[in-house]
Image (cartoon, each protein chain N blue to C red):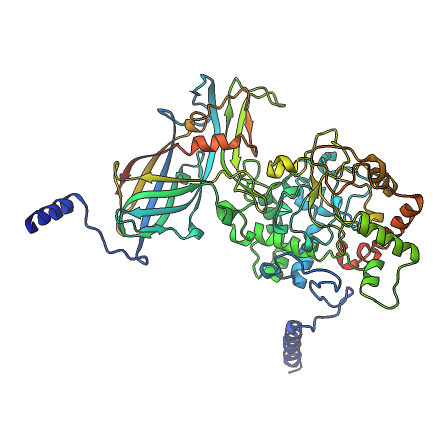
Length: 348
Length: 264
């Protein structure tokens, strides 16, 4: 009698628990808080990522996060996505000019940040990848990065009961395939939204957030002198340009490799100005280690190479010492400490 | 006059098999066989030795290409396009079963066959969940038919050895031709999609019936990828991948499909 009572009560509790988990907006409170899914920040434009074919769910996001930090994605289980995209460096590989992959192999370009990719129609420095869902194929199969095949990754994960359970929860099937593997990774990556810098608080008029006079002057300068490419609020217009840094030793021709159009020779994607404090070195090949070096480049170092961007004045962008200080003060308001310390985005 | 018409009709009937009613819901099997040869010779991977138009000897170690979007046409002009979800095939020389593209079309007598060599731009940019089977961008590996760095399929891949090719870093004298390019996602780039139409009237139309297995047998002379409007020189072009020169090879191989006969 007593045993039966316990069994019935137990069953009821399981049922109640199962039901309560299904109620929308009534998710169990976790350490990371209520999972709100993808949110468009108030001062951001509409994202370009196709959420209609891959809606972000708690289960999909958490699976994607686990995969992002999963070294089995590499041939010998030594390298994960997080190896070259380190959260504390705004998901870049801080201190490395070019990415440092498997077996100490070096890539030819600087690891770009996993940041605000939901607003990025074309990925990579050359824009060769047009869908975030296709992006992970490149680092997984690249000889210098993970040197693995996607098919092998799928079979390695399929063999692990924990992943079969997680894929079932996220996608309703234990069968892992390229599609759901990539969609889980996308769900994590689109959630890497950097929108909580001081700049954003000021723009959204949160509390009494305000720029100092120096920051406000810097914003005006950045808008006038850099805003043609580094457009607010993402601080990139997503285009490809030759900013006159000169041809690298390996003659990397950037976007030309993807389009084969002569007018695309030496063009690279305009990077965002967000989180610069955490993402040195700068440029597609990581040649500048400090922001001072970057400002030196734009004021006196522009080299006249094929397809130099017409927005750059021939003699460089003249900057006084005071103006440089103001620009750096404003750029500092774009550093998003909440983003690089967000526990939801960290390896669990 | 009536008599004459009658005779013509009778003559026509005696030569043409009875045409079944065209019913798009009564589908029957049809296969297209891609029988790869080299000039007048059988294609034997690794050990067969061949010579290109420039007199340079070579062997073929790997040969594979995508065939897609199969369409058939009747003498009266009626065309039928196979459901795109079942119309992508990877022909692999190392897998004899793969040389048949097996589709279903309405019963009928078909006098013309059209297909694409490569993968159309619509499918090349479709959501990853719609790209399964041979189109799975992850299915590849070293011999994969997909470029991860520049999203898109490799339509035609031919690799082998040629003494005239310069030694690669591993010391081998290899040629590697990886031809792709669907025209670009948002900027126009090279387009190597080739649509091929083969007339079937001279060598036997396909009589597709539910209780039969019609097979359109094509001889595919892969040496034409190297010889034709452009005679490819192994010494100067040992590697051709995503480059303008790839258009020469694609234009060459667009001529390699010849109808030999139809098994009805």
